[in-house]
Amino acid sequence: MSAAPRYEYAGDPALEASVEAALRHVADPEMGLGIVELGLVYGVEAHPGSARVRLTMTSPACPVVEVIVDDIRHELAHALGKDTRIEVEVVWDPPWSPERMSERARSTMGW
Image 1 (cartoon, rainbow, N blue to C red):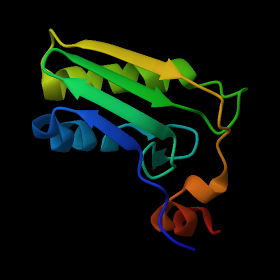
Image 2 (image 1 turned 90 degrees about the vertical axis):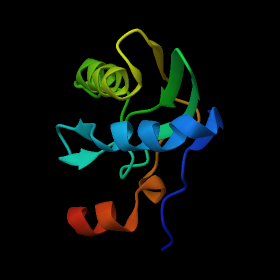
Image 3 (image 1 turned 180 degrees about the vertical axis):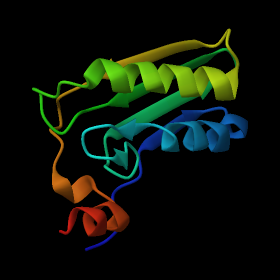
């Protein structure tokens, strides 16, 4: 199977690598894998002074949503500056599916 679809990025191209690196530091503590590898990130918009992330969880009953959202805010503030306005929106449409996972994540999960 091919690599997971990359999330959509909009905004300042100069910030894209920093945002990507920051998001790759955020892991789902239950799965033990990064949110980018799991395909949880649907979209990012970043401009100087602000960033917005759209993501989902593997299940609406996920008990660690707030932990992940807080970690995203922390990592982006570290990468973009503590005065950056950061918005994290958890969405359920489209629903997450294992097809969004990277090959590395699938391998780690034994899929």
